[in-house]
Length: 193
Image 1 (tube, helix red, strand yellow):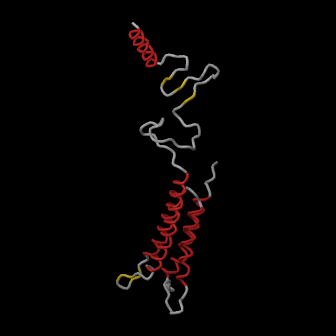
Image 2 (image 1 turned 180 degrees about the vertical axis):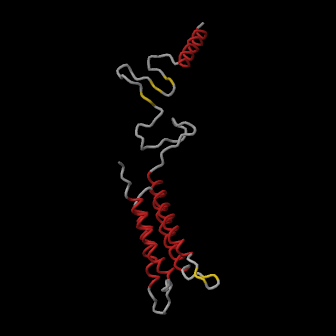
């Protein structure tokens, strides 16, 4: 008779817990824990107390919910994005400088001018998108300008990359103008009326 009473009592407790009925210690309903008798609001266990602290997968998160990335991951992405943007600026400025004397059949083709317009815009917008900061945009622009101007100086051996032709002169000045325009546009927010 004792075993039957325990089994019946256990079944009643299980049924009450499944139905979400209140017990002496509190009630459990859809991720909420009822507060003890003195607390006015139940505690919500489905979200972390501090939004900056992430959760382990499966702890109160929905299947498609994105967890906030950690700070070291964001810093790594920003540093790598800055390095990629600065390196791309140096490479594309050098590539464009060597394209200034490009000719087809003796006719000077201004391919370098397209590079001087498109490359800084793309690289600097990439830096802004990846890092979300203004400093990498400035660094990429400064890298472009610092790389371009030494090509206008004659070396001791007599080598000159940006010779005195119209494409080279436009390339030399168009790049910094584009860099300044992008820095202004990205770093200074538009005025709202």
